Length: 471
Image (cartoon, rainbow, N blue to C red; front, side):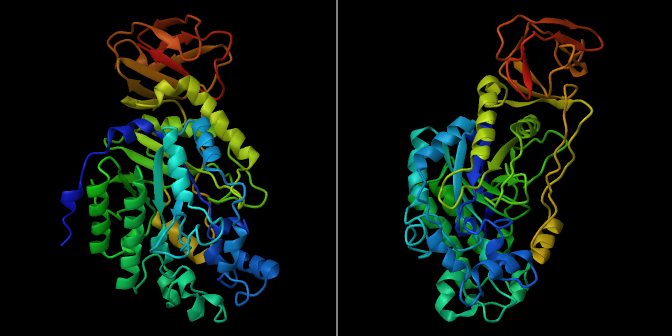
């Protein structure tokens, strides 16, 4: 019987301090770059737009299957040092490529799975190279696992598809009933699948010692004994490496809850994480004619998340050649520039007594089971990330040592910020000083029974949001 109490532990301080991470969806699905990273599944489903695109562009599923994209994932411009430098410039403190998505393509030198980035595609140990490059720069390494989705992932409505050829089982797994593609299938993974699922995690953990082990949703279909076995292995071999999980796939206290594309309305007493994407289309991988969200929106999200005891894990998808789109690089560097000025209000901070004030709020939300089932049925899902629009009336608070930080999501036209939360007789007994991060100009401020009022200098120290340091 699984003794889950034996693998419970506190979230390591370094993770609670880090606040911001990056991860990279990169695999054979990056070659067609059509709509989203679920291409590997949807190309096999008649009636879906990705199936139609595939047949028109590459031919029949019998003659050109997903395995034929392997050699086209060339990675000729992949450079782990350049990836690591981009992480540093973004201000992220932990990062890593997706270790294995739902498509059975492992991005490490695996003996468990012959379908990997050393034997195919780039012919490089992507995990090994990134681990070394990232750690040389002090970046914590993230390993993410999505491979529980492989159960039923490739099963096609086309009986002539290459997934049903026994010679291709090494690429797609065993042929299964179409029903196994549901989120919670009637036919659960068999012993062979469970064993391979666990062995892949144990191999990567034992070989590369990642600092965080992330599990995507649907891990709940894996037999509990195997989930516990993996949790036990991580617990015993990685003393400072948390597990992150979604929904109720692991018991509370065994790791960090991740609410994909989600937010909380209020401060939580536990450390949590949300994974979100820089992409402004409904995709986690590079697509044709990509579009990216603005750094301003990511920064506002990050501040809201951190004020409520959360971390933001932001995704960006490289091209098939291993390079990043310049528009994505520009936005990431813009985020990093803001963090250089305002980082002390983010890194190592903890929530204040109240998360913030203002007329714009965020509701409890996430990528729930209803949206997952819709995506399984239709191949696409409505965007769950509805960006909240903030302005200079909106603040988020953090604390660090004796300092409280009030992050204002805009620059008022009259240069006056008014914070009602910090009025006389409120949360702070006394205020010794108020300063603006990134500016050496002294501030004029007054605290009344109505509000703390601050007059800002003429020049902005940065774009997107400004931070008051209140001692």
